Image (tube, rainbow, N blue to C red; front, side, top):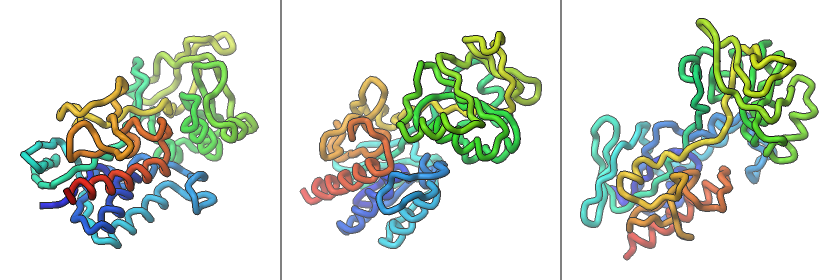
Length: 303
């Protein structure tokens, strides 16, 4: 029996564990992707204490601190939470059951897909959702990045170091990326911006060969590329919460109060899965929400 089970092993989950351990709470982390999505970030420049650091390296430091304080980390996926009187039962993908007096859900979010013809067909054959993972496979080739926010700009900037040509395609007139990222991509001669345009289809034989645009470019809707990186945001991994009828907003993010409490007593949530921090989903806000959630769980368990 644990005092606390933390579902998710990203910045929020790791920070929650560090604080829980310092409160002498027996805690366990269950996470399928250790480090979460931020581990795929090729560079982080806005986390205090580091001028720049690779995402995977930062998460490894989080993990080392969790282990230093003695918490257990299970590499697996939690598939069900059962409420039992004053405790909870967490069941993982292997059917193993673990009990706890409180839960913190920090399951993060997943990549959002375009939902167009050919997208699923060419995943792993030219279509990717992780530019850090798959970018090196496209050395000296032509690729497209779909999206206009920070993650898309980061992808374009990274891929321009590897690829011969990078097209950044977004549907609005202007990018929504922060000014520093807009400046970088606009000043990079290997990156061509295509605005007011949607990708509506992926085509090819065995591998991706071209993408189809809804707005013709140079008198053609077909754009020849070897790869397409989809960077259009994410959707919250809130399935466990919805099964328990935990309140979420219309986008599916878990509603939390200032103490990271959910609508079910004894269950807290933190990180990208919540509607907290004014929608600013960053490593620093995820970690702070994790710390707050652990503190609230400690206060709850004291009572």
